[in-house]
Image 1 (cartoon, rainbow, N blue to C red):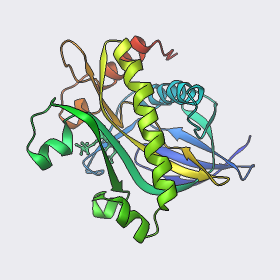
Image 2 (cartoon, protein in one colour; image 1 turned 120 degrees about the horizontal axis):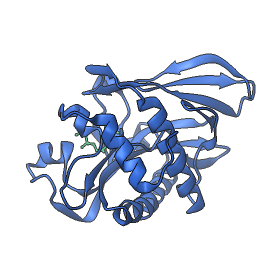
Image 3 (cartoon, protein in one colour; image 1 turned 60 degrees about the horizontal axis):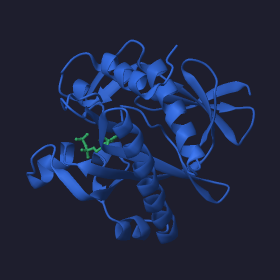
Length: 237
Ligand code: UDP
């Protein structure tokens, strides 16, 4: 597949067209952003680590029956994916309280959430990705109720598969965000799954091993991502 013109440059990935209208190439850059793009830094190896991390997780999810846009890892920083119509609603599951939930509801970080919570956010940088509900998503035409039902079912399935995977490797999957799109009338998992879009803590020490290390200036950001990959047995070379 030939890489063609740049279609879109996101905060961490660039999207290129290919000579096949059904496929795109994602290029994972080293750019790391937080606070809605207010802070951006280059972190060496990040593009490569996230590309390989994402490829591994997408393949595991696919084996578990979750259809994803992942087709083939093309290079250290590039992946071939299905070209989808993205649904502008982010799906967030939380197994433990952290981040915006703690700020919004005054909870203590680390409180176990039973059952896990499920939240939707409208993907709009200018509005700061506000929290929305299913009714608003349908009213404003972002997704149909049937699509939202499928997104929730798939997000729950992803949580079951990945919580178990992280637990077996001595880590806690605290929360994560997924994005879906439509490919040939099916709801398919898109974007990426990497330590940029989830929270992962060490089970014993509760050490943060995800993008909170960048948000909170804790240092050793990519070293932590690599540690997670190593524990899961994800090859990074
Ligand atoms: N998240 C993300 N992109 C966003 C917002 C959130 O990937 O634009 C992820 C975030 O890394 C965390 C989960 O979604 O794993 C829940 O994020 P939260 O609502 O707590 O927001 P934050 O505290 O990161 O602002």
